[in-house]
Amino acid sequence: MGEKTSDPQLFVGCPQWSLPGWSSNYFPQHPKDTHDLRHYSQWVNAVEGNTTFYAIPTPQKTSLWLEQLETNFRFCFKLHRSITHERKLRNASEELHAFLSAVEPLGHTLGPLWIQLPASFSPADLTVLEKFLQLLPADYSWAVEVRHRLFEAEALHERQLNDLLYRYKVDRIIFDSRALFAGPCITPQEREAWERKPRLKVRPVALSQNPTVRFIGQTAPEENSLFWDPWLPKIVQWIQEGRTPYIFIHTPDNVHGLTLCRLLYEQIRNRMPQLSSLPEPPNSKPATLF
Image (cartoon, rainbow, N blue to C red):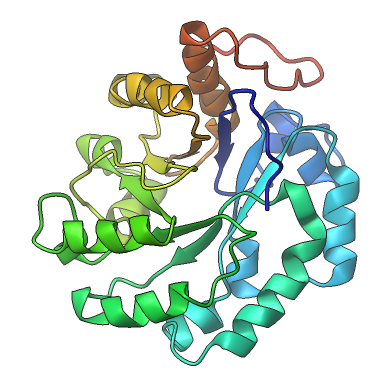
């Protein structure tokens, strides 16, 4: 449902638009600020919409979100867990309709909607996935994330899944946790990330218009560019092919996430000056590796 444009575009963001540590480093300090999305959208141009996995937004919430956006911004909302994790895509047409009705007012600010599947979703469930994909309205963009090891790069069922998504013009979310697992596992956040994040082989495949990468990095911000460097020519290639990539950066604590996103964006823009600049946040400094 995102707006159509012939201009090259790249969207970057974090897994959330609010974090306590950001108030001192990025956002104006207020005792209880309900406008974190406005501040966040002054730094980057996309966000992972984890909030909709847990609760379908009310009209009041979507209106508030729209009021806070001042830039060319995209939400990548996850389908509600009742669809993906409780019903596991089976007999979920009513829930899907309710979800789409709730997010429809966000209009052109919607990026790909994410079908994030549980790790138990295996190759045996591909027929279920295909039936679900047949329900999806074509005026939205869609992306699927799988975590079962039988779908990872070079596994037997990788091509089977990719062929299915390609037929339905659905992107596959690429989960790259190599930087995380090459780093330390010392802090509580690092230990939690090591326990919860999948460790999968990676193939940089684009199946439709919005190739999406979730890059899981290390706590130390200066360590991450070495691991994302191989992505830079691939992202440039996708944009040159007329695609619009979405890149999301995680770290165990996410404290430096906004700066990392801007740094990656600028590294792409150095190779593609025709990309528009990200918004210039108040009192910001040039993105550096600290």
